[in-house]
Image (tube, rainbow, N blue to C red; front, side, top):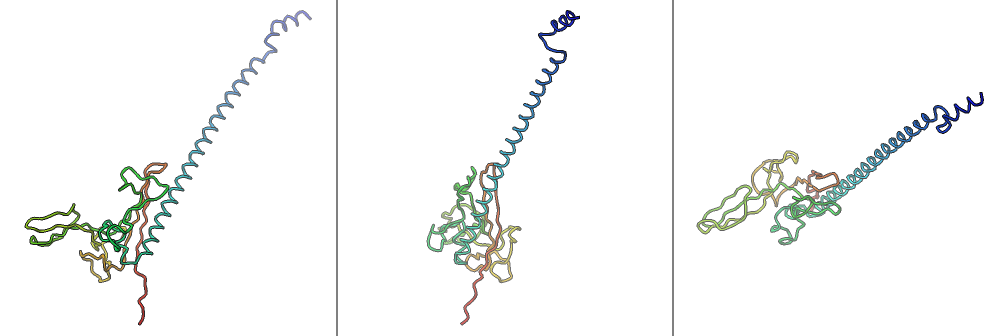
Length: 231
């Protein structure tokens, strides 16, 4: 009986009691499963961290763009009202204090990267109801037109110039245009850069963000809210 027990034990003694091999195999499976769970959890955590970082950066970009638009609008409001158009339009020649003295229609936003197609490398742009027209004067007569190129000498000694005009017939439904800008209840094709009472404004900010090309638009309307002095 003893020898039989020893014989049974001796034959299996090096491998341990029955079922020990199965228990060792189960432990390895548990380790593999645990490692897999840890890898999946780490992957999910990394994705959440990346998403959180990206969202935080996008919020920062939005805040920079919003603040820049607010600053530009406040700067326009602090400018004498009838100087706003000439100070912030595309034409540096008509700036109130002399050529090129106005801020113009382009502006930078620190912290935002301009797109590859950004005009003059600027992130921000002010869009006013402006139309570029051509005027011909001299022996060739005078005339007006739509958006054209550079100025030059015309036939018969006439001179052709181009300049920007504030127009009521400007097409922009989001800004409520065409519309009466000088309060005479008529929408015409004249230049109202010196007699407007309201001025629709679009602030456009375009940049290259962490999530690719992004943009923000702010629409507003400026008005002359000054009270007349009573004599």
